[in-house]
Amino acid sequence: MLTFTMPAFRQVGEKQLPNPVLYMAWSPKRDLIALANTAGELLLHRLANFQRVWSLAPNENTGKEITSLAWRPDGKILAFSVGDTKQVVLCDAEKAEILHLFPVDYPVSCMHWMEVQSESSLSSTFSDSEDESNRFLPKLPALPKSEEKSDEVTSLLGEVRLNILVVGGPSGFVELYAYGLYKIATLKGIAGTCRSLCLASDLKSLSVVTEVKSPEDNAEIHYVQLDTGLLSSCLPELTRMARKFTHISTLIQYLRLSLTCMCEAWEDILMQMDLRLTKFVQEKNTSTQVQDEFLELLLWGHGLKMLGQSIESSYSSIQKLVISHLQSGSEALLYHLSEVKGMALWKQKFQPLGLDPSAIEDAITAVGSFTLKASELLQVIDKSMKNFKAFFRWLYVAMLRMSEDHVPPELNKMTQKDLAFVADFLSEHFSNEELFDRKGKYFNVERVGQYLKDEDEDLVSPPNMEGNHWVTFVQQSTHLKESPLLFPTYPQKSLHFVKRMMEGTIDICLQKPAVSLDRSYSCLDARLYDDETLTVVLQCQEKDENKFRLLAQLPLSSALRCEEEFTWDPTLRYRLSTVLDQQGEEIPVRELTWGNQSRDLENMKAQFVAVNGIRKVACVVRTFFYCSRF
Image (spheres, one colour):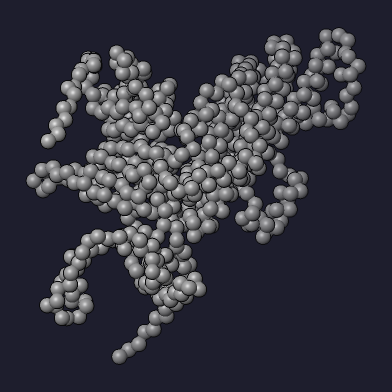
């Protein structure tokens, strides 16, 4: 007889903490441990001397009731769930910065973050093909160095290999998120509250430990193992969809930060000018015209040359950001969304993942509208730069003449057309009726700032479309005006408004692909395609029976490997239905998964199927219902 002696446990350290600890989790890659205490704090400590690395205090955006912790497999991201706000938060393990958060329907009681390990070469093939976008899209210009969070979404990706965050809660609530970002599957109906989760590395099974309360309020622990073969069979498609969604989210973050840089370039100088002008006119309180007050401000009070240079510098910075960042980012976003639409239309491959072509089309339209609004802003910037440059040139010449100074010959050449242009500029920008906006707080001297305000109100000075031949042509053409090929322009709205509308539409697009792993189907007909495959006509019980039916190929390999035995009772000599009724609970049953081997039978009331495996064909028969009276 062999005996084994276990080494004795040895205490390596002890640390007193100010608040009781509720949850803790070791990093899978480093000597770090994450702690969540009763005060709602998230703490990170090193193993050596239990040194604190950082602490994250609770706040109103995330919440203060941490209910579970989970590390990403590479140890770079820490996920924690918050019960009072019903959110899952992803935190950077290096900087203690919140990178991403998303809401859930129920408070999360447990989480598990795993990395997908598959022997299939198809997943690597799909990942490699994802990089083909670099052959068609230019590299996006880097954001200003002041934007420290420009790579937040990119850092969420980690390695190329797919990883999945599994969250669980009460009533058997379970959801799966690719890269911790995108919901790819949902499961409901398990009894009790989830206490532990474990998704197999090959995605073929999900183990769940639940706590079930009896009517006497006694707790029972249940173990449930679920077949998630649908995810495993769709792993290449799932990986490609998740990577594509990552590109889309990265580009949305890129556009958001680019717009922030534009707002900073405008606010630093142009807003100061507007506030200065508004305060100057309000304090003057004279009967003179606004034009006269503005000239006095420029000539004698605040410096003409510096103001002109400031405006031109700000406009140039904004213009460069629109061209190099907004336009290039929007084009890349349209490219990736168009590819996702193509994936959605390939129903044989991507239908099980829940991609919705109509939602993706709405997202493409929203991005197109944002691109048009950015182009409109470019035109406004170009016109404003010409206006201010000509105006300040005229004003500088007038100042020199009034002071009897020498006027340089290159500035003295002003034609009658130039003078008319300056007169129109003064009339357009400094008339008494256009001095303030509707709220009486904005001096209406420049047109760019209104596009960068994050407000729902209409533009104070929308672009004048009179004389635009394209706009006139579209308005006069009924069919072209209603064509889905033309993106809406929203001429009365700001760039910020159209951006928020685009983000909301894309968010709906990204949230829709969530496979329901407990979707139920009824079998209408079944035929053996060959010795190892079964062809079936299925009807989804969650939808109108006349609208959703599909033809699927089911591999019988799992059922053929069933080792359970079943013996017929020879004393039963009745009909087969009687035998099944009396011995049904004893018959071994195996679940079959079709993965992506299916095809929707659109607008077809399919009922029967005939197959020929040798010729690799199938014939589906529609049913016709007749009503007769006996």
